[in-house]
Length: 563
Image 1 (tube, rainbow, N blue to C red):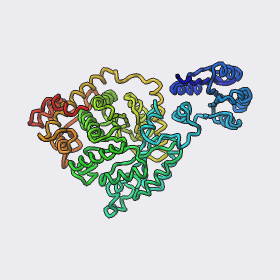
Image 2: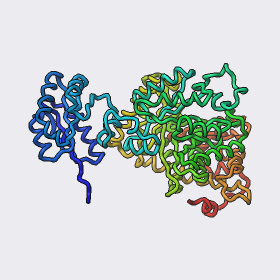
Image 3: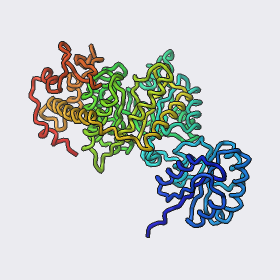
Image 4: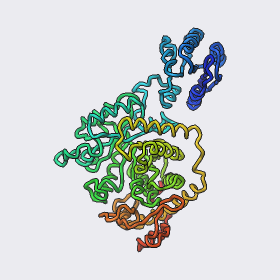
């Protein structure tokens, strides 16, 4: 037998004609599966009670946004006339200005929930889905996938945070959690913590706090995690580190209950000067780390593509890196893969071409999905794209977030508007989250489908076709005994040393060639060019100059890699 659909009746009381709040409340209730009955503005108390009786309401939501004294009189009338419904289990909720909300809270606990406009949409949505207010710790999901489901249709929000001292970072985490600004705090730790956590003899006290909070013990991590146990109890995650990767991972699980790690393939090593390992060794170590998390059922993000984009690699290299990331995650046992899509990278790319690049990445990744491999979309503003001016940066954050919503992300990585000037304080994080939330709310209400733009569709298809050529070239580098070239560390390393994966900023690099030249073309796409003539090069043309071997038929090689 089907369960009876719950009914909510909503109205603005008395002479109040402000119904936006009621309408929004009912919209959220509708999304949560309620049958909604909207009575409109200026509704007498008697009518509200009568309709609630007639409709068999489970919940009555009323609002009043005029003077507190008049509002209190109407609310007392509602308490008197609604007492019988209340005894029969009908719940009442109120929404209004803070002064009227204070009067509602004082009415002998009549209202099951009182909203004064300071609540987030998440909290209101949680309430109509059955949570209590205030929401308690046990009501908040404590794993990423549960949090994603709980927040839908809104994405989970995360932001990077870490200040140069433990004391300031602890206090900041407490503020962020109390403000309910984020679902995930990405803990920024300093360089010594990333590279030398288990090697105090290699640490330099003069560098403490360089790049983040100077955590030096497991107890430090426990203290930071404890600071987050308030407000909306955000999840926590942090860097994977550059040495002793498995040991760090084990500690992260034990101390901060890491929500998910971000693991590169090619970075945080001797190639970019941020770790001790050589390139091939680093690829192998990262694959081991991916497998370690995968074995434990912890979601994994590979933050690979944007490292190429930030170094002005052509869009096709970004897309290829996105595919290699997902492919390696699946090959090494990850069940829940987080595909990170950094927009605005390089900064000169146009919105249309940026969206096309993200969509092409997802198109290539999609066939990897199956019962044992799920893809979760995460988007973010480009790390280098914020202007220095504060007001302009806030505008950029909002506009970039709105564009990202075109791919329906499960997670939005907020990059604070202060990034070009200074590391975000707690106040900066809270402000940036509010800017981002507003852009997301606007999009969720009914964003136009930007994926249908002909320019986007054309570039999307072009990038998928070009990326397949590049992937074929990487497969062709494998030696005869390699069964799975795209998951083989030696083959992946050769893709860099041979120049298949390359970026202009890697000039004079010990591993990469850095010989590729790129530019932003008239469409706003980042493309490879002939450095002498400035003519745009297709991947076939570019790779023909690099590889003396014939690229094998794609279908024959790719058949080995299908799920």
